[in-house]
Amino acid sequence: MTSIVALGGTPRPGSSTEKVLAIACRAAEAAGASITHFDGAYMSSLPFYGGPGHSKEAGQEMVAALREADGVLIASPGYHGSISGLVKNALDYIEDLSTDVRPYLHGRPVGLIATSFGHQAAMSTLLTLRTITHALRGWPTPVGAAIRTTPETFDEHGGILDAGARIQLELVGQQVSGAMGRLT
Ligand SMILES: Cc1cc2nc3c(=O)[nH]c(=O)nc-3n(C[C@H](O)[C@H](O)[C@H](O)COP(=O)(O)O)c2cc1C
Image (tube, rainbow, N blue to C red):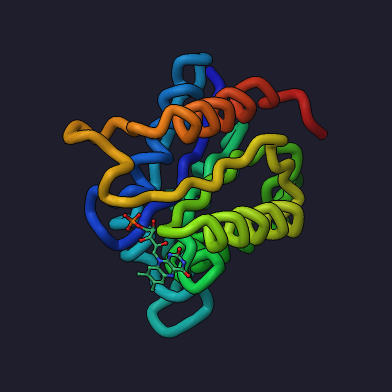
C-alpha cells in the first residue's frame, strides 16, 4: 500500500487547519493510500531545529515516516501572511533527509493547504508552501487549497459547510494519491 505523511495543524486542539487536512486525507485514503499524521500537538513537542534541546533523536518518527513516504500533505495556518513558525520548524527537520539517496522530498507529490481568517493570508501562505516544496525538491500538486476558516465554516461534527472548499481539499488529496510513484 502507498503511504502519505500528513503534517499540519496549529497548537489549538481541534484546529480548523487539522479539520481541513483531515478532509484531504480522507480523499487520499479513499483512493487507497495509508496516512501517518503529525498534528499540532506533535509539532508543538519538537524543539527548534538546531536550537537548544534539539538532538539527533528529536523528530525521528516524523523524519523516518517522511523518508518512506510516497506522498506528503502539508497544512499550515496563515500567520501574519505566511506559514506558522510551528509548521516551518517541523519542515526544517526535513534537513535530516539531505544526504539520503532520495534527498528531501525528491520524487514525491506534495499537496498543500493553507488556512486563514481572510483570503489574502491564505493565498500568500499557499504560495510560500509551494516555494518551500520546490526548495525541498518535492512536486506541489497542481491544485492547492487556500481555505478561509471562520466559526461558520464547519458544522458541529467538524464537516465543512463550504462545498467549494471541500472540493478543493478532496482534489488535493486525490492528486497526491494519483501522482504517487509517477514522479522522478
Ligand atoms: C499569530 C496569528 C497570526 C494570524 N495572522 C493572520 C493573518 O495575517 N491573516 C489572516 O487572515 N488570519 C490570520 N490569523 C488567523 C489564522 O490564520 C486562523 O486562525 C487560522 O485559520 C488558524 O486557525 P486554527 O487554529 O483553527 O487552525 C492569525 C492567527 C494567529 C494566531
